[in-house]
Image (cartoon, rainbow, N blue to C red; front, side, top):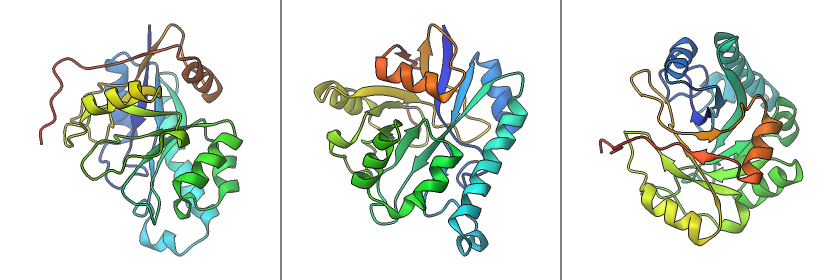
Length: 229
């Protein structure tokens, strides 16, 4: 079986992350992963202050440059796919993992932080991508209309948050949503713990989307996970 991480941040882009590209690659190769979906934040705090005064195109270039650094560190060791964790300016208490994105998609959409979940969901579906709500049952999150989602993160294994994974699992089953798990990796002392298992390696976003739609995967769960909070 092949292991794919579905939720990973690096210090290249995500201001709340402290792991270098090299540290991430070392951690995930040691843990037997084949693929990482690099879901850097695109939220009101992502970009340095001086960059916020510049164009959206320059912001996308910054985001993609960070992704390329992780790809370079992983060359010959891991497959790195481009994803994003998006939070809006106005609805700023929920996060959405978008899978299958490209640089062209980001440039075409404009500043996705200025959207809302209704518009983002429509755009994602227009482009054949997929959208999952990240850790939907953390205390600060808002539960999203399930009709706007392809699925939710039923297991988030950040030890620094109470994600109420049991509730998320039950919610996905009740509403017939796809479920995924993710490590929500941020720091070099965090051990890879989530993602999906497949019978074949996931080399690109097309394979990832096809696999998710078909439900041709199993979720990865760590043993005896308990958040520290």
